[in-house]
Length: 176
Image (cartoon, rainbow, N blue to C red; front, side, top):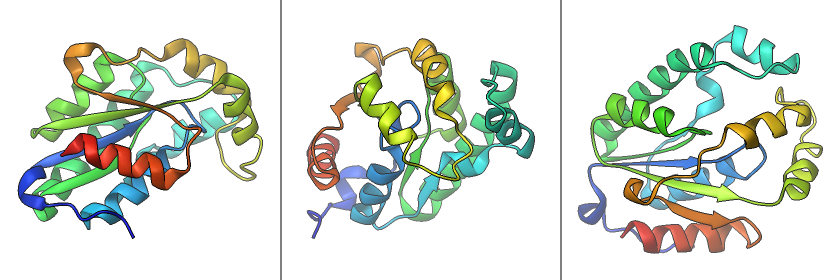
């Protein structure tokens, strides 16, 4: 059972679990949303059909592909914060400007949790996701694009070698 979270300590708040494909964003995000008793917003669901097809075809997205996606996700997070006091989403949020775009769209305090692992571990995870549109061939482009959060962004960085529930508990302790 996850530790209880005092909503008075966290509202209003948006939590974005970020990182490259295969790092475990969705797993940790869902666990955090359960602990906060709020919906979990899967960033992949907010991509346009064209962007999904582009990635499925092995082409990395451009900033022009990402801006409308970030805006849609940011608005959904903002709506969830209004309804629940807190929102949890998974989003690669690879660059500083993407995180700033999300912050602007959300309009309440946003905390980012970057999930990291070795390239080999990430590739193994990606190759174990049959049917997902994101091919392992795009991992290197994501790693090249990733700008780790700056100290002033106040982000937490977790290496995903621990069990997801341990990562959840560490993230909850940090968010308090």
